[in-house]
Image (tube, rainbow, N blue to C red; front, side, top):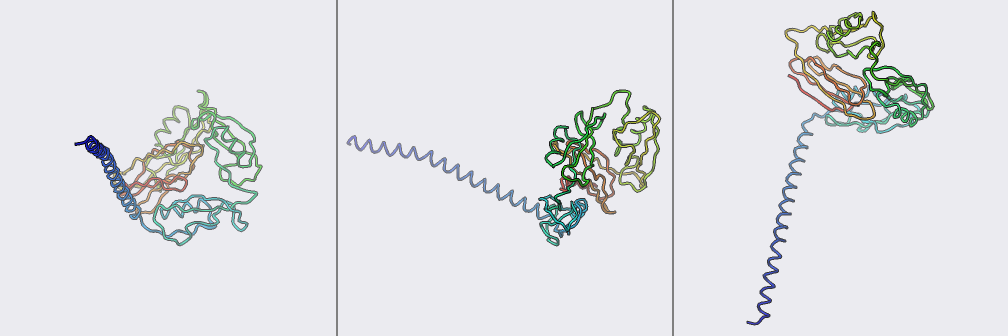
Amino acid sequence: MSNEFFNEVANKKSKNKAKRPNRKIAFIAVTLIFFAGLIYVSVDWALDALIHTRKEVPVPDLTSKKISEALDLLAASNLAMKKAGEEISPDAAPGSVVRQIPSQGSVVREGRIIRVWVSATEEEFAMPNLIGMTLRNAQLYVRQNGLMTGNTDNAYSNEYEKGSVIDQTPKVDSMVRKGSVVSLIISNGPPPADVILIPEFRLKKLFELTRWASSNDIEVEIKDDPKSAFPNGTITEQSPIADSELKRGSTVYITVSRRKVEGEEKTYRLHYELPQGKNSSHVRVVLIDKDGEKDIINETKTPGSKIDMDVPYGSESKIRIYVNGILVREREVK
């Protein structure tokens, strides 16, 4: 046979060998695409099933309501809220809801975020929360909102780090005008040994306060609350507030939970930590049982704050945590 024949046979073999890796690559690619599609369909099906297990609820009418009232209405239906913007509305009170999406009466599933537009005027707006910010960030935030920084004083604090804002005037959410002067009190950090600052005793046990009061020669006057939503012996209110300076012999006034419970009181240990950031958050912790809903916490907290407390419950209860109106956690306790 001629050399041309052998060369042609050799060329065909080399081409077939070159095709084999390409076939393997194509097979692997098709296999990966198949499994990726299978995973996508499975995840999509699981998410769809999870979403559709939530109940359908009607959207309440939020128009003309203050933000706090709107949050309460949405929380009752297990819905959340997001501020989409502000609109000038001469017929609406400043800080009230002008319009919403979805609209009143729309049927949505629990957990849906309702967008709202809030009434604003050219003259007034709600004072932002500066508590917990560094002095530099607070001053920057004040300027960005068309306000001016006024007097800046200092005070000792066990609650806030040195250099952080611990108080402000005007207070948070009060109505202010462009150009208003904002006064700040900045933390000097923990006090020296001869200065007595009362710690935050709310949601702590009575024995913690009495032990501290005894070591600092402070008197304690106690008021019982039989309708409290907290475990027995829990301090629910205190005066003066945390970080107030006291003299030896001063009196601290507190309210203590004294619930009437049949048998042994059952409690659930609740722990939640707010994420770090620049701004404080409004936190609402709700206990839901056969008697309805009870607010355990409904206040503004600084970034990184920890909620660590015992919550009493009955045979079947739920605990929900809302941060800035958005449901972030729900737990069933039995």
